[in-house]
Length: 161
Image (cartoon, rainbow, N blue to C red):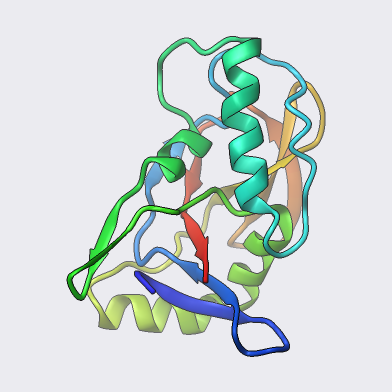
């Protein structure tokens, strides 16, 4: 599936995959202008909609042309086994927490397959808190907190299957 499967739904037919490496070691959440994007989805499988909402909203709110978390994930292309996967997105708050919960297995699988472990650092989610703040996950102490959208946190993309 282009990365590491870390969650499967009750049917066993659908799940979530994270990339084997971080897409950024420090990038802002927003596109340069604070505003309410309404990217409030926080459950499993809501990160894709959030990512689309963030990108579309910044066209209206203001995009200074520099990169940001949702854009990095949206534009990611990973080729594994001759197949290219281009449907990556910034994980929702809950998707990111599922990654944290399963980080040991993800880290082991990633490093065994040319990837990298999660850093003991903050990772952005796609879930917005308000005009100035968005949620992130602390991969050192497990906390989910919200911080200023201009803060440079890490990013690891996910995709659904």
